[in-house]
Image (cartoon, rainbow over all chains, first blue to last red; front, side):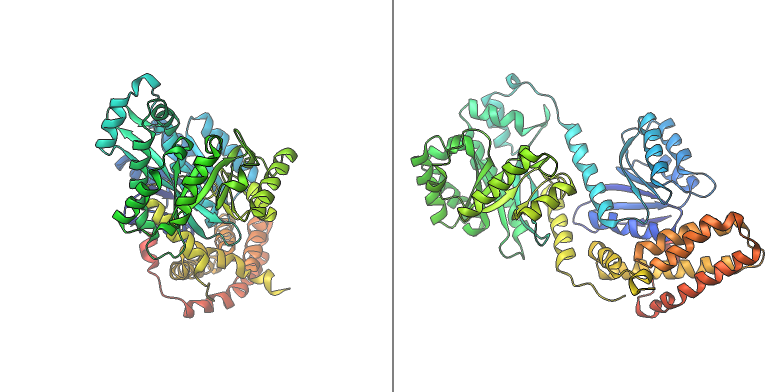
Length: 411
Length: 121
């Protein structure tokens, strides 16, 4: 039995690698350790069965060819033991039909097959599969909470107890593949209610008039934790969301500057993302606030561009440095001719105004290839990485940056 | 045969990009030691077809992981044809594999020795 400890500051959980080939075990184990997994390897059905008996694993990779006993037998055993929640990545050097049939068999056993990969193993595809597994889990664990359960006192208490924190989703320069920024996204882990989606609590905070308090707290969290992502990276930025409703709050620029000063972070390292719909409603006031942020050196992005109440006449009056194309256009931009036209027009518009253009919601390689060709500057989405806690985000950014920067050497 | 049909450097570079140069070199040394062992088993007297097919299947995948395309192609041919091969043809196939592996095995001198026993447990 071989154990490879995680190579990040914190562990992402336990990974079981089942493969009868020593070379594949070595490679998969190394990728797992770099991603932050404590990795155990098993070379046989019996070895894997014993390890599954001995403890819980957060994810498993399974090679279907396992000598005398095959991977199907192990899938049956996993189902018999009721390990339906353990995400499984199936790997096989046999033909694609065997792989797809096995996947269906596993699904019939109600096992959680997150991906199936063919050999020779593409290490990048394995890394993505191990990351996407985390994304899926996070979504499943979110509690269902009705708006009436979230009142002003609940939110204020959560802010005071620092239950609301941030995760970071990397933004990637499409031409080079280099991570250049990370968007801080609010997360609420309530001891009483469970994990509450921002889609639930942010509209409630708006209704209850608590957006200024919530935004100040989230920016403080983002800067305090994001500082850790900025270390050793020139020109890297942390992005935070600011509700359009605060584009009439004239005290906001000074409060943001105060947060930056308190944490010793340069204004150039921060970018505020403002949702288009409301930002445009009072153009003069919004222009005043955005201009003051920009004069302090803080970047400003127009978020969810293309949805809501676009007013093209307002665009030249608002000093945005970045334009983020809404994910609803990005998702199928490679296959839907109408979405393609919208995305191309947004890129053209952003460039014409001297803005950096970002595509949100990239979740497949075809969309990425199209956006890269269309001249989009940055991309963000689960194809690269879901939102991760700061330790994991740092590990991800380190690995991705090293992969780009490190010159390869002759073996 | 063009150079890239023997060794596709871009495949190895992708592995380096994911693992870093040191870990990629370590994985390569695991591959070199393991493949040398497999070829020794394939060269033993009284080689049975099942063993030939199983070892060829493993070499096919692992060699392709590093970009050794010729070795992978020869291993695939052996895996697919082993059941029908005469003992003489099987022997000739093993020799072809050894010939393709020889220049690769010299890479061992350029990489750090990895403790293959650790992974073999």
